Image (tube, rainbow, N blue to C red; front, side):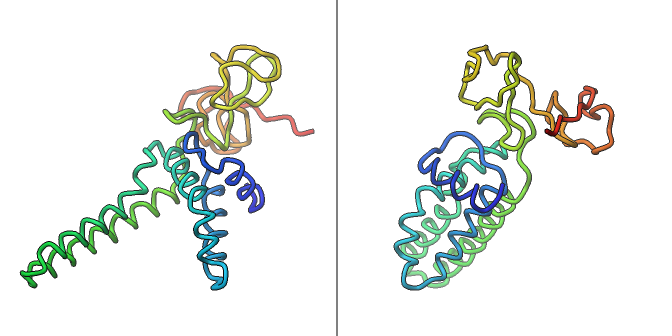
Length: 199
């Protein structure tokens, strides 16, 4: 996914917290947020405008990893708990500073964990949040690409009960596993590797 495709997708799914997002979709939109945040005259307005789509794409990105979108709230929760404990035990300065240091370390670890989750590849194939965004489902009747929310093909009306993975170089058409490009059979499920027709 290119930068413009990512921005367009994120704004067209402005408040869509279901489904999945690829790494490129998330990180290109993150780059847009970062660059606009560096411009002093517009950074506050941009942060407010981009807050909901940023949370939505972050949620979809975690869904791509098979995790709930609520995990992106974990670092913020750690910050709040650390501040509350620090203020609550302010009378015992040694204890308060110890809690703040431990809470700060846990907050840092939770931020690093979240960054790693956003950077790792998504689950191949369908998971509980939908179809693989990099390898969508194809209608078994007409071969049209379909959305994970479709029960019936939008082109021919056929049922998507036995939909298959869209074939691509290095991706198994049966299970979606990433295979070596010269493989004849998938090492995971044994399905024959078919090469897509390029027109």
